[in-house]
Amino acid sequence: MGHSPPPRVRTVPFCTMLLVTLALGVAACGGTSNPLADKPYDATGQVALTSAKEGQKADPSKPLEVTASGHDRITDVTATDASGRYVKGELSPDGTRWHSTSALSAGAHYTVRVSTEDEDGAQGRRTIGFDTNPADRLLRVAFGPQNGTYGVGQPITAELSVPVQDPAARAVVERTLRVESQPAVQGSWYWVDNRTLHYRPKDYWPVHAAIDVHATLDGIKVGGGLYGGPSKPLKLTTGDRVEAVTDAAGHSMTVLKNGKEVRSIPVTTGKPGFATRNGVKVVLGQESFVRMRGTSIGIAEGSSDSYDLPVYWATRVTWSGEYVHAAPWSEGSQGWENVSHGCTGMSTENAKWFFDNVRVGDLVKVVGSAGDTMSPFDNGFGDWNMPWNKWREGSALTAGKREGTGPADGARLRPEM
Image (cartoon, rainbow, N blue to C red; front, side, top):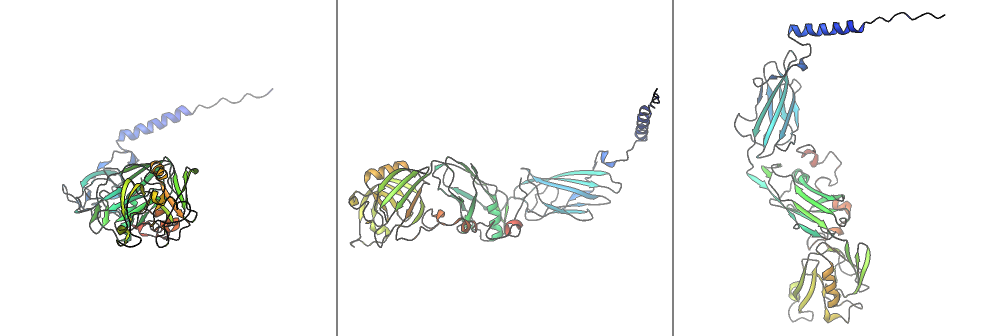
């Protein structure tokens, strides 16, 4: 027969009673061995905001500074504006001083939460609120075009109220200009000059996209006493992808909608000496009637090339006066030879159809012409004629710099939220 196991010794209740007794004993003595379990003491007398006087507004161009006195040391500082955005900062090795390392916004309210520790390890807290002075000089941005629906080739523009030339200041501004689309696309800003930026995707916008454009520039320090001002957001949508491809050498235009050919049109383009520009252009506007004069493009009155004509169903593609329009006087040449002064001419019926089936932002591309290529910025929207890698170099945030070494990185005011 086997042996029965020895009876179990029940020690758990004894241990539990011992732990309870010890815990009650500690409580009876009125203290705890863990300072973190105690309620934080009020550190108002030990912590001071030395960069702003009590009840007065702070200078946003100066660093925020918090100091500790006596035997207390600072263990943590959190500074946020009214939107919850954080201010970067550094704590001294001895814990007696904390200072901001990113610029404050002008005309903003900040809340500073300071944690401390005394020589016995007890934890203290102080919360300080203050406001910054408003800016004397404001940089405002106006986005374009207007709210509405456009073709997939429509670039976005940003016009600044004050010129910005310094690379670090440009990086500050550009970082606040946000473009978001659904579906999402890869895109970038390009600094056309000190006051103008254009934004385009790597490829054209998706069809039926929703695009939201806004700036977070308000109150941000740009540099040299200049701060960002408020701006009005922009909302766009895109329609179908409509492309008109004109073969100047073949004297024909093919119109595609979402990649499918919907119409082939006989045309005439610029004759020698007035060759139509090659490349991609974007529809700028439409006029059902416009009077065209040769003097508007530098042709002297009375010369053999002089003209003064009433023109119908005119779709503009350059600011200097290149249109796609009705040209009933040249119907005998359309599809056969180029006889215009640079515009793309077609029959009245075809011009009316074209007028009714394109919108601002649609694409008009010319190939096979003896003319120069459409310039990117000085005569309409030739943005798409610049290769993407070259376009990216026009951004203050990328501009041929290695990540983490350019002025954009030094100019970051706040961490991404």
